[in-house]
Structures are given as C-alpha cells and as structure tokens.
Image 1 (cartoon, rainbow, N blue to C red):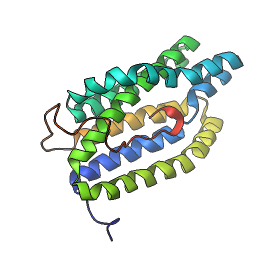
Image 2 (cartoon, rainbow, N blue to C red):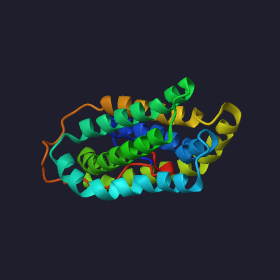
Image 3 (cartoon, rainbow, N blue to C red):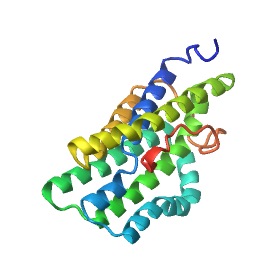
Length: 216
C-alpha cells in the first residue's frame, strides 16, 4: 500500500516532469555519437573524444558547482538547467537543417549537457528532501527508480526505430522538447522553498535525474 499512496500534488508534478525528461533521454540515447558518424563521418578517435568529453567536464566542475547550487533556489536551478539543455540541444536540428552542423558544435553541446546535468542533480536531491516527508523518501525514490529503468528499457529501441524512419536528429528534437516540458512541470510546483543554504545540502540527497544516454 505504501507504494501506491499519494505523496501530494507537488510531488506529482515533480515526478511527471522527471518522467518526461527520462523518456526523452531514453529516446536520445547515443544520439550525439550517432549524428557524428552518420552526418559528419567522424573518425573513431573523434567519436571517442565526444564520448569522453561529458564525463571529463563533469569531473572538472562537480566540486565547485556543488557549493554554488547550495546557495541558490533549487527549483529555479532545475528549471534553468532544463531550459539550458532544451536550448543547446535545439541548436543541433537547426544547424543540421541549415547545413552548418559541425563536430565542434557537438563537443560544445556535450559539454553544456554535462554541466547542466551536474547542476540539476545537485539541486534535485535537496529539493526532493524538502518536498516530501523523510518517511516518504523511500517510496518517492522507488517511483523515480522504476521510471528510470522503464525509460532505459523502452527509450533506446524506440529511438533507434525513430532514427531509422525519420533521420538522425529526430531523437535530439524529442530529447530537447522533453526538457522544455520538464521545465514547465517544475514551474507548476507551487509552495514555499527553503532559503538557499538551509541545512539540507544540495547534492547529498536522493538524485532524481535519468542517466540514460548521458543527456539527462
């Protein structure tokens, strides 16, 4: 029964926002390397650099970014990071349509996505802890975890089929729109939020971000 009980409307918006983003990331799994190979005829070395850039950027900025997030409103940080990912991903189909897509642009997009993911994750843990009661955290995280795994199981096969039918950038568009919808869902969450720097430290609570495809 505990897994079915309501955790409140605010949590419902948060979960819905997360689900949209998670499934968008599932659809976009491996999209950037795929575009590099199919559109730009990138070499194996270039694809390796593209795949390694995100983790490298994350390792560089994780430590300084955590304290910065701690002293900002967590929901605002999450919304800003979703909008940043929406905007940077949308540059890919635009450049592709104009015939101006480059490997350098893919590197920039990868770096921005990694930075935004770090900031979003740092804010999301503290925000979730403030949103639900401590005895509900296990149920809340179970719901996020089930959503994550279902998006991993369903998203990549559907994304591969979409690429085969509609072209290499279609899943990037879907992923970008998922971040926009996520931001809108987070905007719908009303109510007070702890002042930045409150005891619940960002980044040390449950993390509610999908890792599918590294574009979360």
